[in-house]
Image 1: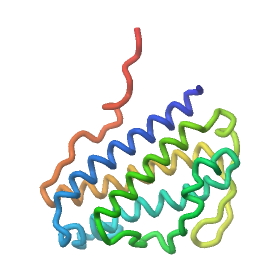
Image 2 (image 1 turned 135 degrees about the vertical axis):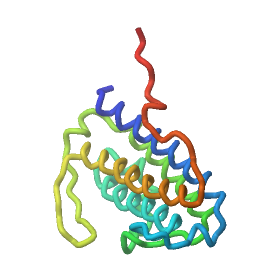
Image 3 (image 1 turned 90 degrees about the vertical axis):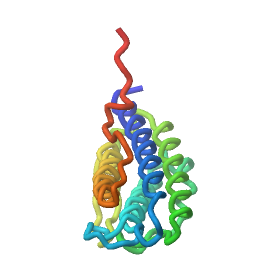
Length: 180
C-alpha cells in the first residue's frame, strides 16, 4: 500500500478518535449549554458538531460518484443532501452522536478499500452554489479530514469555555513508531 493511502487511513482513524473524545466531553454539557450561542461560525457546540457532519455527508455523497466508492458509500448515497452548511440535522445530541459514530465507521471502511490508482483520478462535483469543479480525488479526501480538524478546533474552544478539556488532540499520539 502506498504512503498516501496509509496517510488517509491514519487520518480516518485520528478523526474517529478525536470525534469520540469530543462527543464524550460535549455529552457532559446540558442541553442549554449545547445550544448556547458562543459566537462561533456555527454559533454553538451543537451547531458546530452538526456542521462537521453536514460537511462529511456532502463530501461523501460527492465521493460516492467515484466507481471505487459506490458500494462502500451506498448508505451515504441514499441519505438526503443537507440543504445548507448550517443545517441542524439532529437537534437531539444522542441522535447526533449515533450518526457521527455511523459516519466515522463508514469513512474508515471507505478509505481502507481505496487503492493506489484511485488517488490519481479526479472527481467532478458541484458545490452548494451550483458551480462545477474537477479536482484530484486524494486532495479532496485530505480536505474532508482537514475540514473536520478545523471545526473540531472551534468546538474545542467552545468546550474550554465550559471548562471542559477532552485531552490530547495531536496526531502524533497515534502515529506508529518506526521499527528499527
